[in-house]
Length: 424
Image (tube, rainbow, N blue to C red; front, side, top):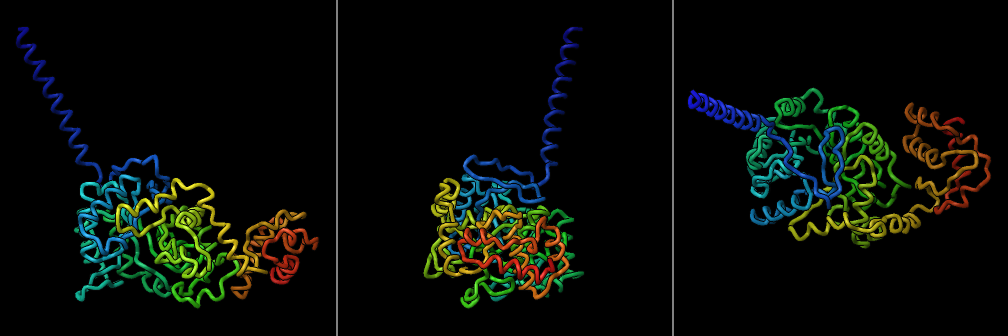
């Protein structure tokens, strides 16, 4: 009897253990394909990618550097980047070689990398990159991306390059926009984003409520170019704006307030222009650390995307993480430039404060500049001006602010202008 009882207990124990492992394996199989396997590296700084909830390293990989390297170097580069906490990558390039090499580079670490892939990139029969809204081409391009990366999903599906308002208006109710939404519904993309070089267009798309991430060209020079102008045309910088373009200010503020993440391209001006005083439209040389610090100072910015072609070059960009405050200080260099260009123009730096009657001088000047550039006081500007605790009409013309202004702005006259424009 005891032998039978012992045998029964042994069999029951075996069945329970088998059932446990069977359930464990089944649970493992049922885990979603995008389960994050990445662990935060203590040497990297991480931010939450807006409303996506994803945790991303502030220094990320662009795909530009992969054009000239082979699969072995790609593996070395991606491995080194992941090992150093770089877990975010933009991949717009439809070049089959680039995509295949990155897929090989990721190997079995796909789940560790958050990929920003584009919908609207196509490698045509002539072996050239093509930007397209043609749904059939988009499908071919996107499925090719999944195949070459050996994956079944892309973390951030980017609507590829919307730089003109008519481009955005043209896709409303289109098959293209429906295809993007279908990809999200199918789980092939987890979040929807867009790439743009135009602040006005990016702002309109942000306000649509469709996107959670915007890939945007941002640096100290582009910030001073009026939205819609071509930043690659040297003549664009002949008349740089006094301070940041108001449309860009609105874009950054809106994204921060509505939890829309910005990932940054052209941080160094494209081709590292901002690192060379002779090539830079600012006419002063900045360092990589200073450019990265400038961009990451904006609350809406989560990732600086860097074009890297070797594992050794990763260290150049990662230096930002251990740079001193002095090494990251971009103000000293930019002040040399603004002293030359902005003499007499308000840069909203707030050095004029405090006003004895409490006027937010920088904000009043910013709203005044917006109204003058628009040629009218829009309802939004009127409401923002009205919401200020103190208005230009309260200025007592004491001149204390002008004594503190580093750019010789005629602030008392600016307050008079604001009264004329806003009425009080």
